[in-house]
Image 1 (cartoon, rainbow, N blue to C red):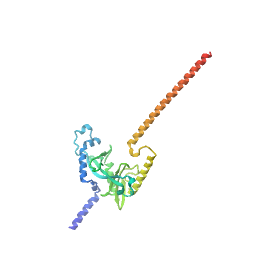
Image 2: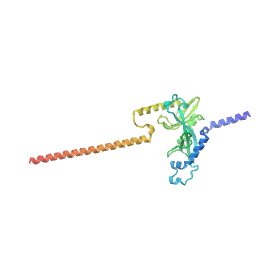
Image 3: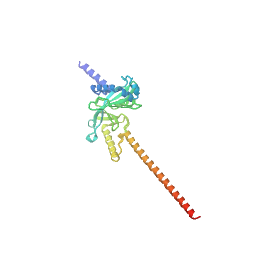
Length: 278
């Protein structure tokens, strides 16, 4: 009996080791059920957002199974580092911030869906996608990252919007390693680059220090402002250009008027001189 028990225990262990995606279902069943229910309620607007339907067509479409939630993951973001004393370990730095899901249809990945509304995190708050979104955008790179550094029930997926970082952390032999799932311009790191979590935090603090220095010398928003930053600059440049045009037109008009006055004066004096000296 003991022999059979050991055999089944070994078999189950091998199943988990050979299939690292088995840990992908780390979302509590109750939460997943609530998120799925909310997902179905939003199918019409989701399909419109993903450009699969026009608003006038959406009223007549059966959305059941059109877009489904694939693998889901708990995601973590960085705490306010000013409050962190020891940042060499994920337990001190990372905080739970919600869940992330692959959005899929019969052709593959379409987007990423987020459930990030506390305290229950049981509703879809937003989607992230683009016209070329596919399995290569997130699903496949994540699986490749798992293979490169390993994936266990203790692994953590970092999705930190302020720093524009998506990465996976896994502990091995007492060392927490981090692999980037997409390029990080802020940290000058490429997809699939692997560093220790301690080195990662050194880079984060260096990047924050540079941005803080920039902020102290400028009234402009930091890089995280994205689109609004560019629009502000565009508006300011447009305003400056308009002011310069007004000044240039005004200057030309004044110079032209002065020339007319000078020419008129010269003509008048010449006429007067000719009149008095025939």
